[in-house]
Amino acid sequence: MSTQLIRPARSLQGSLTVPGDKSISHRYAMLAGLAEGTSRLSNFSTGADPHSSLACMEALGARVLHNPDGTIEITGVSGSFRQPAALLDCGNSGSTMRMLTGLIASHPHTFTLTGDPSLTLRPMERIRNPLIQMGAKLYLTLREGDQQGHAPITIHGTPLRAIDFTTPIPSAQVKTAVLFAGLQAEGTTSLSESILTRDHTEHALLAFGATLTRTYARVPDQPARLSIPGGQRLHAIDATVPGDISSAAFFLCAALLFPDSNLVLDSLGMNPTRAALLDVIAALGGKIKVLAVEERHGELIGTIQMNSAPANRAPAAATTPFLIDGPLTAQLIDELPVLAAIAPFTANGLILRDAQELRVKESDRIALVAKNLRAMGANFTENPDGLEIPGNQTLHGASIDSGSDHRIAMAFAIAALRATGDSEIHGAEAAAISFPEFFTSLDALAQR
Ligand code: S3P
Image 1 (spheres, helix red, strand yellow):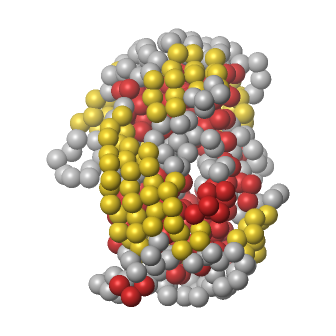
Image 2 (tube, protein in one colour; image 1 turned 180 degrees about the vertical axis):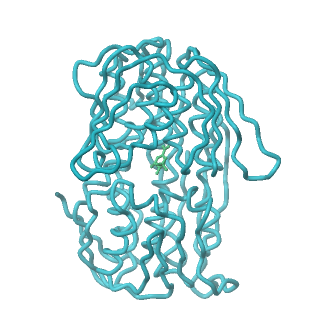
């Protein structure tokens, strides 16, 4: 386990290109692996998680080439995965495990998907339920005392039939597992979401040549109903993965902590289903200017500049804590740890509700945020579904436990910038799951 020392800072200045989006990298890796032809992907995520997806694609018969210029070429299996010689190792990646299960369930082989200790504790019934309705032969592992099944997952591949499914919990991974299975099933699969989640799968499927229809409700912000005909073939693409806004979130939150910060982020993914953070940053006093924006394969990529309000001109309007609940909680799911970690330094604090999903991520993120806020001397209340964190607090440096969770390690490295005194982040190496360059970038941008 590695420990990073974080000294307090006085400002955040500079420009940054964050690594390629983790969610999009997974989807491009998997669809390129299934497609016919060679896809060329630039700015593929440097995080360990999407590389677990790439390794699984290789084990399933795709050819993966890592070029010296950083691009990745994937030659797909033209619709027919091969029998892997060993277990499919998904590492720490829930996205790999859940989405891949949907992608391979109809292929006529036996697969076992496994992962690290954190992944084998995470809920998997959520994908088993729709996939067995489709006819999948899929078995979870039940350990002593388990009410619910977990990984390792064993699949005996068999033809699937279409279903009409409504996601009971907001989860883009579950939506993706069903759409990937539907793409290869018999008949047309329909899917409705109770709450709109990130729509990268929809864009990626269209980019790889699939037919997918979205019927929008007449009420704004309501999720679309999706229909995907089965038996489809995909074709390779050339694509650039946009920068990961969930990685950029750490730096946007850091900039918010200091008056007169100035941060420019380029090639940043700004998909509207992922960009709620920008509104939150603005509501908390950050000024965001969009300097450029374009669309590639349905994804928005832009350059933004963020300045925080000078100390003497902080926003005065709001006096109540900033509330995150309902659909906003789902849209900010990966940014919640860092928002909670910096909440004590905001003017009015934060109330987070409806976030019970955070308890079943790479760690129990509510418990670990609480543990580390407590270590820094913060005053707050922990609830089963969230946290209430008053603002305007002074925290001291502390010994931080990442719990081997990448987002906890990075969230508290940011909070530590505003502490009085040094902090130590234990288990800092977890950052490499999504953002291996995080500590180097932080060092370059934090002014001391
Ligand atoms: C992801 C969806 C979210 C998110 C995860 C990536 C995706 O998980 O937390 O980091 O790429 O679809 P859930 O689908 O479990 O909410």
